[in-house]
Image (cartoon, rainbow, N blue to C red; front, top):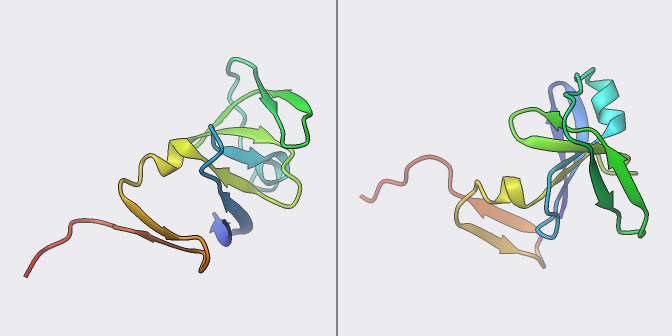
Length: 106
């Protein structure tokens, strides 16, 4: 599911992808936001095109792996989705309901 969002003051195209095993941030967005890269163990990712890419990691609030992502700026995968708890998704309507804070029964 693709949505428009902002990171800092920059617009971003965000892909929520339950099939992604990691979170990813585009190298273009890393440069636009002037984010520092943290040296981590190199990683390899096999893209949907079948091309294998190796990079260094980036840590923000969640861990993101910077990659060339084409028209997408951010991919939020299972590490982020796993923090949400119960989520109600309607794929046909492209809606996602997430409980924020405590729910009080009256």
